[in-house]
Length: 328
Figure: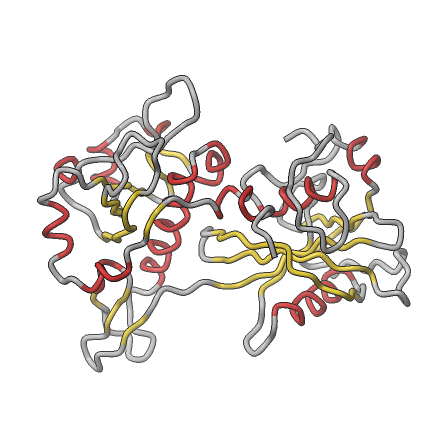
């Protein structure tokens, strides 16, 4: 398949050489902290620090090691490849997790600490990829402090990319939870959107669910869609994926068709996760723009909806630009 769709997903963009070989160097952080070119990406409570507001797109505020004297966790992200960044190509990048005191000392203005999901669509490729990588690994560290076998406190190794049990020497590696998100079309090329029980009553998105152990992505599409909507779908076709480190998912986008023996009227919301389901034509969705809320610009769901609004059908991965998208 082409990368025409994936290239436009905010959190799938990247301009970092992850430089995996360097992680095995036990002296890496000592060397990086002595290198004046090293830049740190501070993370506090799932938020990143933005540079002072200026004309143009927002950008991350990267710091020198001397500006961040303490960090609970450090993760080597790799080498910057961006030619349009303030830092030169080859700049080493390290994510650092800060506690309240360290974050306040670095930047007391809390308005500059923001959730990446609110700004990532506006960040340059390198900064967007750095956010996804940093949050994904740091969230894993926060939930895997102890050995899953014996409960002992694990120690961090490989520049932040593994944890090791001090008792039996076993290693724990970062994990990602795959989930499928599906754009279902019926015989009239309408799409199915659902309202989650945890959302405002007028917020709608595509249906999604986690992949279970021993299950293929395609099988998860069929199972999850039937569980949440009561409908059988067929012909699941992969469209593209985007990391979603809130806290640890990989969203795998698919299109699927309503099975020929199913009527669009056979909708049965599961009543627990999904409270309402609606079919929309392109004209109907645009007409509802002021009455319903759609996914934010950082999500793959919104990119998939805009892809469909642009006239692309089931299994078509050519681009995401919409001629008349619903306003964001």
